[in-house]
Length: 319
Image 1 (cartoon, rainbow, N blue to C red):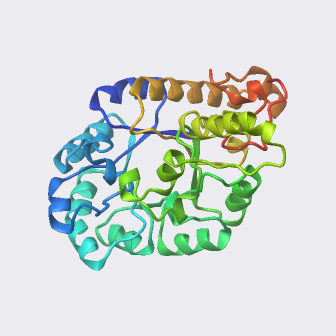
Image 2 (cartoon, helix red, strand yellow):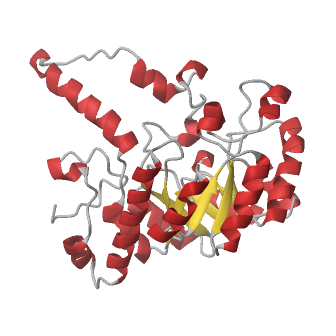
Image 3 (spheres, rainbow, N blue to C red):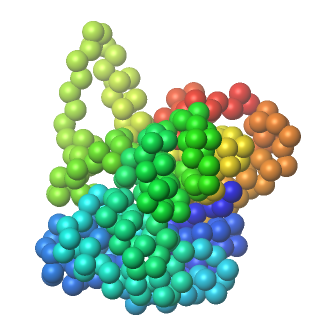
């Protein structure tokens, strides 16, 4: 199982590789995109953060793709807005064509039209979690379109993930493993990733919260629980306990998220995931893996809440 890592700083390419990253994903940002289509145009789902989340220009992305390929690793480019107009797709053809020529292994896309665009330009498509592939019928639909890989939604259980791999043989599946959980489903998010642009998640986090309780004296505990859930799920989301089952399910890649996060923290997560994959490979049972695995420093299982768990149903009894 490969480790897919976010890259937003070229200085961290080598450290990430040394920590165990096998694949990289990133986006790019061009000022002319907004000049052409306006401030709400999304080339990818992080376009609302402009160069904070996509520090690379197209020329940077081409050079970085070539460098990563020289180092024997895989490269995936994000073009995963929820949808594009025909004018958008025509505009993006040149981007895709140039990155295919540079050696990009795939493009993370979220709609059938983008899958078609990538294939017409000679590239491979990876279906984003924004496409909401929740069942085998949708997975088979994208397989028939020629998609190389499917990134499953963050909220799928391990049993559901196993069912997908069983029912759609020959398809690569990728699952989230560390950081950046979401309160909602990516595919049902109708806002941009900025509070001022109407991002539902940010609006919920920043808005006033009112609670209706049978026992008003419970209010402090409820408020603290909500605060911990909001914080833990986003900043410290973790699926380490599920690594053994991921390997058994033949998951192709596990994804460390966090293009906007501190690079040193992402580096530690990559190293931690790599260590646990090696432990799982050398364990003859899940129980043996649980006994020897390395926990995340901020694992919320330690306080029995599990607020940060990507797979809360996978419980390590040793914690």
